Image 1 (tube, helix red, strand yellow):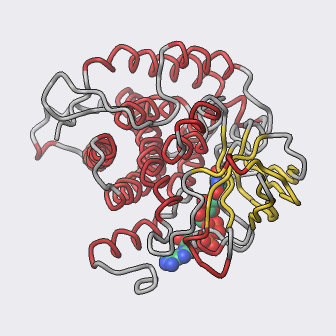
Image 2: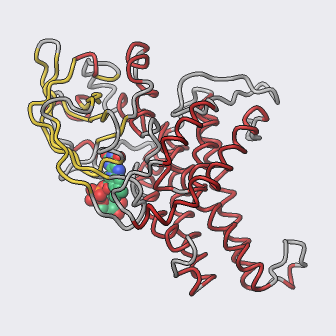
Image 3: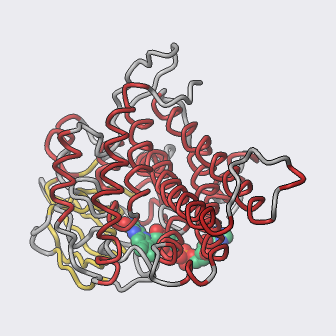
Length: 395
Ligand SMILES: Cc1cc2nc3c(=O)[nH]c(=O)nc-3n(C[C@H](O)[C@H](O)[C@H](O)COP(=O)(O)OP(=O)(O)OC[C@H]3O[C@@H](n4cnc5c(N)ncnc54)[C@H](O)[C@@H]3O)c2cc1C
């Protein structure tokens, strides 16, 4: 395994950090205060990222690394860019045109025709329903075959970029009586009759990102918009749609890395100026309590970073990574929340006030330990894998 950052990414990665600092940070506060206003500056950023040829989502391609015979491909590249953009702003990184969670789903399970059709469409992801959150197998949105179409009925809530994206990847069941195996995902393009935006949420953090509720009432979707295999394979169970999470969980974990990195760096700058913080060259018996907190935060950050790289590397090398994807998401999500709050604590009044972005980062980071599976759900998945238990045996 090679977890060195491939040299071929270094140039564009530097540009991505530059964009995070020069484009996202200066408008962070503005769009935090102006919730539900689209940050129009992101159109320019999206075009620049496209020009730099950064992946909108991981695809199956794998590039040979120069450094060794291991392979680093688009999953590795994606987590590095996602970290860089989230170092700028978590909310805005979720609303950059063309880079939705639905795009990752399309990349993970679409066939070549679907990739050609929807690969460049900004797509959000709609799994959650009023009666189905952590237990995604409980969804009740239905898809009934009608000739060359499926007819969708149901309510989806908390869809990141659901208002702004050009398509929504909707999870629906073909036959509730057949359980998880009958759950399939469908690309529903914006403006399809029967698809209605009913609400945009007001939130604790990531306020630059819209979070929508959408109702589907007799919404007719071309049968070719079903992602993956239309057959209901009871033996494979949830396999098809769940593969999406193996790709997206490391991405959300990488978001945590960006936010944690930003908080540690800014706090070090501010405390360093105030308390003359040393630079790790001090003998251990001279380390003060504040510096010890930095050691802990940096160690947790670095452990999270390596776990994210491992999960992405496994995906690039086509190794099953469900457990590693959950491990990195659980670790990075928890660590990011702890670090951003610790940084507020270390700076006290400055950390809590709006003079700095630290209080915002504290609010933004909590979602990273909730969506794409909460902390508790990741731990459950890891336990099932370690103990060899099914979801029926360990709930
Ligand atoms: C800002 C925001 C954006 C979102 N974006 C999207 C999106 O783009 N697409 C989408 O589909 N969804 C999205 N969601 C929904 C998100 O994925 C869910 O909130 C999450 O899966 C948890 O579901 P829930 O809120 O219904 O909580 P619940 O499932 O009701 O869980 C409540 C609490 O119980 C715990 N819990 C639940 N089951 C167990 C168990 N078996 N063992 C131990 N503890 C358990 C949970 O960890 C949690 O702490 C978003 C949510 C928010 C807030």
